[in-house]
Length: 116
Image 1 (cartoon, rainbow, N blue to C red):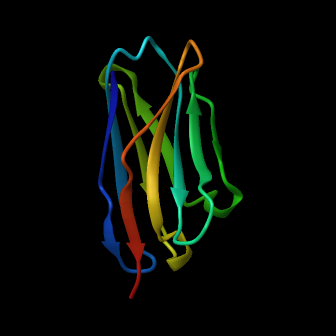
Image 2 (cartoon, one colour; image 1 turned 60 degrees about the vertical axis):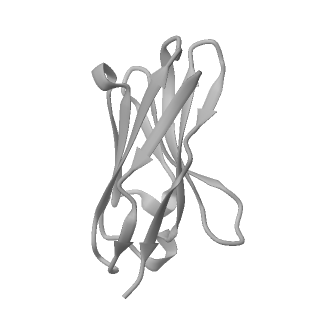
């Protein structure tokens, strides 16, 4: 009974910015990590960024220096600030939560389109 609600996607020009949000609710039983994945049309889903209990983060090489993942523990929410967006960033972005007993949950996805 965990629900992840994503928001913030949309259409943006190359070089623009978007901020994605993912709010978790339900019987989470404590968060171990949250992450953003993306899947471009016709491609495999890939890890974009993750934040782990304790605050450590990691990023795909393709987004380092442009994207920032952060979390608000009090709100059970994770954010992805995306700057200097490129057409190659166009994808459906998915939030994933891993709890402390090893269970994972996925959000519904939010579309990000980078186009002039």
